[in-house]
Amino acid sequence: ELGAVFIPIRWQTVTWGCHNLTACTQWRRNLVTAWQQLDHSRLHFVVLMMTHLGEVRQFLHSMSLPMINMTNVIAFDSRGNDSIPAFPIPLLHYDTITLNAGEAERTISVGFRGQCSDDVSRIRHTLSDIFADFAGSRVTSCGKEWSGNFGDEMRSTVFALAPPGQYVTSFRQFEAIQAGALPVVLGDRNFRFRGGSIWLPFQDLGVDWNAMGFTVTDEELPGLPARLRAALDDPTSLQARFARTKQAAELFTPAGLTEYVLYVMTFYASTAPARFEEVLSNACISGLLGREAVGRSWAGVTIGK
Image (cartoon, rainbow, N blue to C red; front, side, top):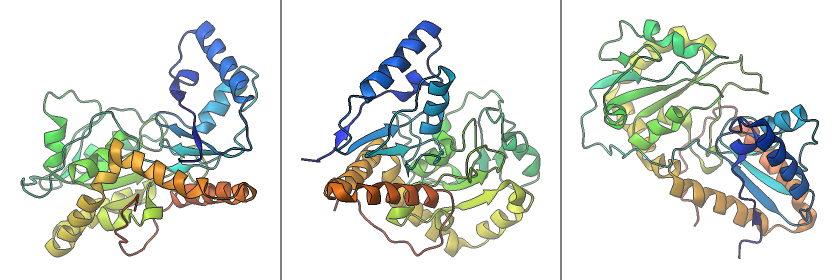
């Protein structure tokens, strides 16, 4: 028995995904009412896949409703906001891109394709110019229509640029790893979240994002082409990056995420109730860890063992 209660809520229906005012009002009132009946002496957990708790608070306050009480509730957050302590997790689709484990040739040195969804950041609008003269690259203008196969293109890419979209994270950040491409996570300080430039899950398991690809701030963007050229000219180091990415790829799937959530909750559910403050403190530490790339040797930890 896990010893913790999962609260199965489709959180976007009480935030940005609710468009009917009457329905939204009822949904949010029902959430607050039901939440008040929780037994907070027990450990609960929630998984937020398309929104985050900061946004939940924002939408509740817009209707003069109180924020839900998160006492003894562990949150797993995919959208990159740790104003309320949360464990970073990847933002995933239902479907997973098939991994290129090394059998197929990678013909695209640096790649990006995506929508112009960066209202706050604007990084996506600059990438095609920055990489216009980069040999072997396929960095398209954001929003450009295309009829090809996204998975095939990602599997053919060495370095996959992963800029923020409407939030700190984007699907592309994690699709790259699913396909075995090396993720180049681009952060922007303009996001109005504490430390809101990057969101890097699984560092508590030893996943070293700079040992797979790169993490880059908006200030460092002009120098990124030179860094990637140097990496491409070092085949030994490049193969080591691919090996680490392949090793981590299973984590960035629905099955891997489920294993991670159960791993964390099994550990904390065995904690005595008197130490729940320590549980939430560790959630906070994990959220802060997700804000920066921590240099460490590859741990190769297998979850669930």
